[in-house]
Image 1 (cartoon, one colour):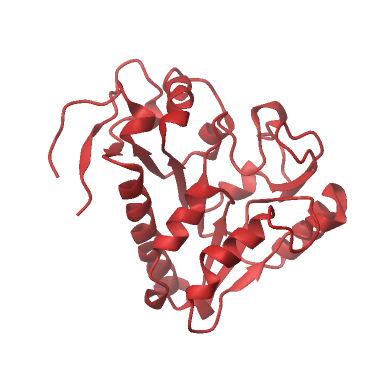
Image 2 (cartoon, helix red, strand yellow):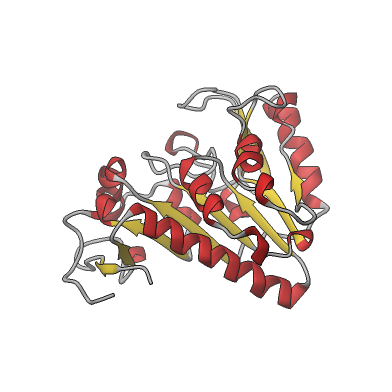
Length: 246
C-alpha cells in the first residue's frame, strides 16, 4: 500500500488543493495513478462497454503507462486519443503518439486499443481541422490523464495561449513557448468534458509551480479542474500538514 504522508495545508491557498493527499515519492504517485487508470477503465467499460482514454505526452504519463499491467484491461474496448501533438513527421521520436507506442503497446498481448493519432504532420491548422472531424464522430472523453508542465500548461495550452474561451474541440498552436512552435492541441472545454480528469504534478522542478497555484494564479491546469491530483513531497515541500499514517 502506498504511503500518503500528509495533506496540503488549506490556509491561504487555492481551494482546489484542500485536503489533497501527498505521496512520499514520485514513484508512489505514479503507481497509484496507474492503479486508478485501470480501475476507472473497468468502471467505464462496465457501464458503457467502451472507454475513451485521452493521454498527454511527457515523462509522467509514460511512467504511469509502464506501470499498468496490460493483462488487467480489455484493450479491445478502449479508444486512446491524444491531448496534443507536435507538428513533426509521422514516426518522429518526439511525437506523443510514439511515446504511447513505446510505453504501452509492446506489452499488450491481446488486441490493441484503437489509437486515434493527431494528423499534426499536416501542419497546425489542417491538423486541428482534421482532428476536430475525427473526434466529432466519437464519444466524448471518459478519462483524461496528463502531466502538468512547470509553467502550469496542460496539453499544448500554455499561459501565453490560454484558450479558456474556445468552443472548438482542437485548435492550432503556432507560437508555442516550447519547441516546436507549431502544434495541435485539444481545448480545455473538450478536456473538461471527461468525468475523470487526472493530473500529475511531481518532482522538485514543480515546487515553484505548486507555490504559484497555491497562491491562486489562474494557470491552464486550474481551468482543467482535475478531479484527481497526484502530488509528491518533492513538489509540495513546506506545504504539507503532519503525517496521518499509511
